[in-house]
Length: 168
Length: 168
DNA sequence: ATATATTTTCAATAAGTTTTGAAAATTCAA
DNA sequence: TTGAATTTTCAAAACTTATTGAAAATATAT
Image (cartoon, rainbow over all chains, first blue to last red; front, side, top):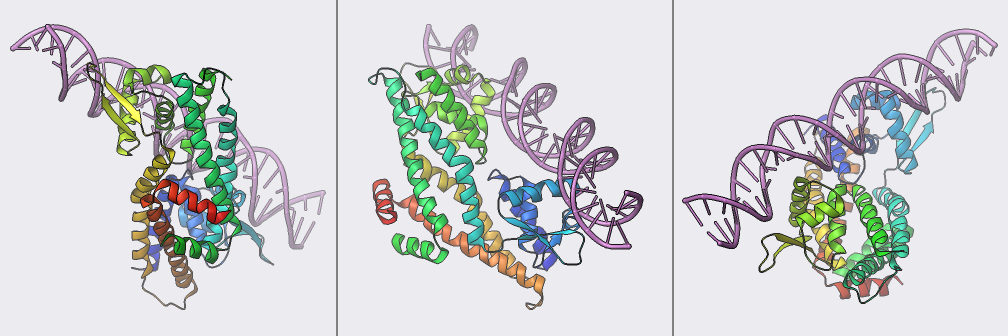
């Protein structure tokens, strides 16, 4: 397979993959393009390579920066801004985990904590099932939270190595 | 907080949470409703409690069944079909992990394997970055794959207990 | 068999999300 | 400053996905 075909395939699949994870297709495609670009590239490069509008590139690169996956770089003598992606996949993953934990898991756990105390007879079947479900999810989420925190702080080789040894 | 308010809050939040994970809002809301229902409930119960159409309920309950999260139950003497959700959150999670692995991770790893061998000069910067990126993602994904496999097969108390001890 | 209850399907429609592109804002060199 | 280059914004349009509801299919009781 030629590089150009492989690139197109990767960008397209990574975009489709992203949509299953609550990330919009274009943001994932721009990320894919940046991941395989050895040097920083400009808005115009992205527009051209993905055939999308300037506004779209601007909006999605900003989101990638908010997620901590991409940075703006200034190249001396160049007027335009350049974009560069973090290439270390372990760092990319922990960054995504960190952000999603903050945006999704933490608020959910907070809510579940509030829903745990409800008025009413604890012997009532409805009340009991509701409380049991909420407590179950909260406990599970709390444990996931701890595991993710350790992963975020840990170094790749340590965590993956240990986990694999542990699970073997 | 009253049970009715807490239920509404949980269903609504669980629906919003689902959308961040590639699950549609209504499917997640039906799942939430079933999780807190002590006994099996009918299509009509779901329609009424969530104010949605019959077709919508039918489509989404079918998806929940495909995902292995909900089952149809027949109640002797009753004409209608009833739906019942798996209540054990550990089982729910491993079931979801199993399905998503099958639907998303496995195909992605297969594709990455194919993209690894491309024609061209390995000293070329573009070729090198492309290959490095693909190999990096594939290795990472492969390890995640192994860890998930073990989790899926493992027994709840054993894994969670051990993990917590391990990470404490 | 027939009538009735129930579930399923799917085309049309509604709702939600993403993209565009042109105008406004900003940056920077001369 | 001024003006050209560049980036940002955002309302409108395009596209995508979810929902409805009524007709068709299926199941069950008499």
